[in-house]
Amino acid sequence: SHQNPLPCVLVSNKGAQATHSVIGTTIHSEGLIITKASDLGPSLVVRYNGKNYPAVLLSTDETTDLALVGISESGMPVVRWIDELPKAGSVVASPILLQESTDEMVVEATSYVGIFSHVLGMGIPTVHATSQVTSLGVTTEQLDSGLTIAAIKPDTPAFESGLSPGDLIKKINNQPINNRADLTAFLDRCEVGEKVTAEIARAGSKSSHEIKLISPLIIPPVTGLNLAKNLSMVPSIRRAPFPDVIVHSIPINAWDCGSPVFDINGNALGLNIAAISPARTIALKPKEIRAAIDRLLAKTRAF
Image (cartoon, rainbow, N blue to C red; front, side):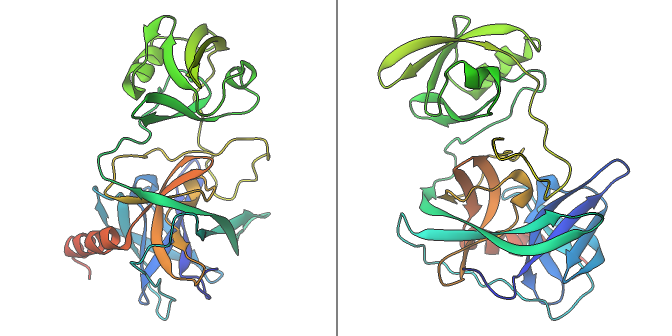
């Protein structure tokens, strides 16, 4: 369930080469919107209620990766935050606003559904920077036990090698891999097409897998791009660090961030700030959002 009308807009970057978008959440009826800052460019357009509005980037907040965007409009529906979190296992939903049509981006209030999991404390590593040179074709996550595979891109050498989500990466070419920095440093020294041997641990047993390195995953430029169903999700570029966040399983992509997370009564219990892996998304809590909005407004001379 979600609020009706939906307190969301599409925030598009207008550049010389490409247009890409994220979702924005309306926090004030007079055209104030928050969204994910690291996905914004200098020239913005907001699509709301079937119209395109010139938009101004008013301020950004480094701690939460939130941005305050303004348009000239009034009477907009405003998000309703709720501080009370549901029980683990409760159903939550987020709007997926866009489908791509011929020339226009059409807003469709479709919801993706997932399960609320838990609250993740600040400073706990999630997913970090990736190599710009080569890729294993996997999304990794730092756990206490070490660097594990969170997701694998289908139809890649890693997928065909027999790797599985949950595998713990121990070594590559006999070099110990303890964290994301080790993996990134290793991959930066390699070339696309090079074959490497990964030693992994799974359920107490070890195995070796030969993997041919591929090019890093490029984020599609257009929101609402119809990806083939067998493709894995596209993670956010900035995935850490954040203040305390809510963890849920709604399957969103990088361009769906900035959207609210609703409970079954249509109350917003968070704002999606990073897509991590196919069944893992993190959202800022209302307490952190309110504090960020205070900082954003303090930096905004126009309001």
